[in-house]
Length: 259
Image 1 (spheres, one colour):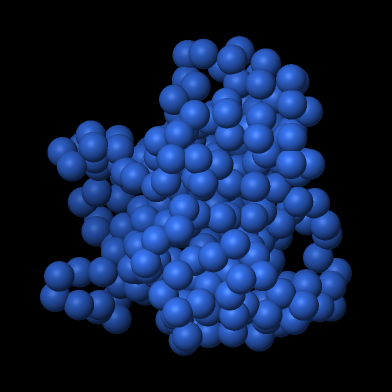
Image 2 (cartoon, rainbow, N blue to C red):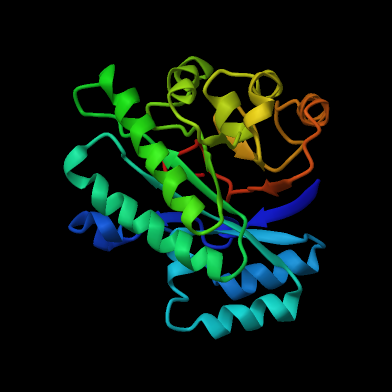
């Protein structure tokens, strides 16, 4: 197993304000310095890092700056994280354009993974057909990821139509996308990460590790998440890929925008 870190600790999680009026520009962003984050991650002894799509796209037109940072630190760009509603046909093409834009850039820098969360929750509530639409959107992500040699994975997320293990079971059989467990999101939604990983271990190519307890996302070891059980479940499936720590700034409760 190889260990990486997400840069969202440096500055917290926001969405690009252009997304209010332009769906294709609604990227995830961490407001901190990417260069500072990557240097800190390297100094801590990690082997790679993950970026939000917005932080990666910020290097468009100045790719040499990111290449120099990778060379300086010796870190690998593990992958890029993105997301979408997926359930609204009228905007799906623009959402997929944005995801593909990030995937193409990620491939330029040798990334292995494209991770997406999502499945919008309507103001009127979840419809049964939303799981079919989500699955169709995820299958489109699989197709575009293959174009760039990336491994696509789906990340269950608080604030979407896939929070709980039961909701996960409604979408995964409908799509071939891999499964990226986020241990804190799973536990926060009432699941047990180790059990979910045991159930879907044959579809796991990438993992997000985060701790959780009592409405808080926490550093590893400070919450309730069963990390020995998680590692045992991964080893049982002979997992030998990247594990990325995702530690967020402390606050009172998880929000829908936190991957």
